[in-house]
Image (cartoon, rainbow, N blue to C red; front, side):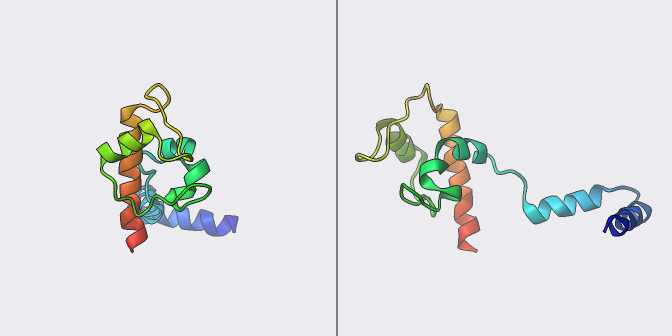
Length: 111
């Protein structure tokens, strides 16, 4: 396996002059880190599951709320299960990143 990887890398460098095409192809295949994912993972995923697919709390994808609707729900809570998050715990900017992240998942889950 090590010999195969070494030969592959050597061939890539010889043909292209660098490893950049291999790195770029890998990033396109796996996708770059989506903005807001880390904030979502740290704040929301323990209840709403990975990528908003549900868990102890309802699924969030497909995400249909506007930013202002999401802000209202997050700041005031929803029913007895969704706690309110004050701005001192989750900034408006962080919430915007989460909303954008969840909306980007709409496209992923529609494919």
